[in-house]
Length: 192
Image (tube, rainbow, N blue to C red; front, side, top):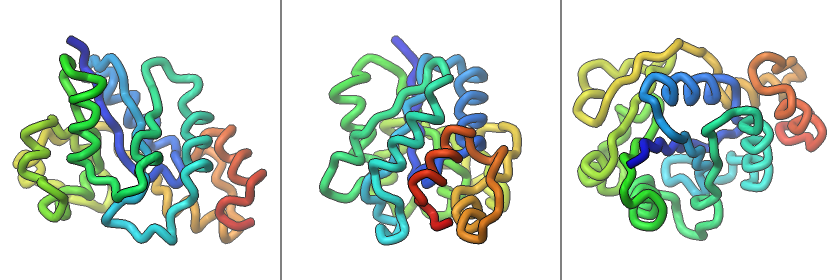
């Protein structure tokens, strides 16, 4: 029986905070794999503001290439319906990781909204949530109601801030992998 963690998010763009957190969690919990699952049509975000699937997938491939035990799933990106975490968990449990221990990595910002998620009570029974502390979001005792609060390095990088910086013409070196930075500018993904 393996130990697998799904890491969900829009990854718009994937940044060093995502990668460092995933690596740290993988090592500390002795996970066999961390699978990045970029969101297709997340119900809590406005789709108009999410970069196209092909670009987010390509950036993830570039970013994770050098890491052992990191994989990417395009499961949610291929769906035409909204991407609900409970459906993703059930898909992986039923079709791929039937005998493995499955975790789901999320930021502490979910603590305030998880009770609005589809079938959230079933979700926390079907998968063990690993809740990462994120700057600006206090999880507190409430996090333990949903999963385990993971103490990792406090990396204050956000995808939305990276997008804003690029639009203003500011450098994002050391916030995203070099290959991702190059791809963003080559394809003019966020403006400049």
